Image (cartoon, rainbow, N blue to C red; front, side):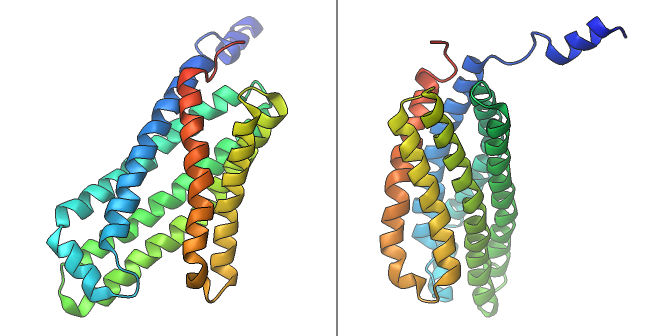
Length: 235
């Protein structure tokens, strides 16, 4: 193969356009937003009772289909996040390819942790179905899901901080959006650090939920809409 042919194979015109990638990422963000609300707040928060293995098991046994749909939703999030990471890399590589790639890698790291965490959800179902003697094991598996996911959210937070920095630096998107993304990312990272450092984290859990949820919902909802409407457009 000659030099000209090699150049075509590397830099040919078959690459996805930034606008196409923006639509993929934006659509993925909207789907993630809806799926995460259902899987986290309706299923996980609705069925799993921290510190109460019996009530948790009873909740799951009363609504096994709901729990399974929550698992399917988390699985969908796990898969969709790969497409979102890819789309965001393409949209933001025009600003700084290296930092855009780094942001994508942090999101992929988070995605891997979510996939690993889902293994514990399968164990929850197994333990609950094996009788009351293993209800405590089911609760430990549910808490292990939270722990693995929490570690992954640290990488997700760094992903948001880098993207926010790229926006603030380039004005590719509204700079206030970049600031809110940075705040949301920092909140995710802070939450994991406090979980690790504080033995009495539960006393701050309500406050931290607000600190994490408010900027993340605002930032990611806004970001998803921007990606759908303007992400990757020229000018």
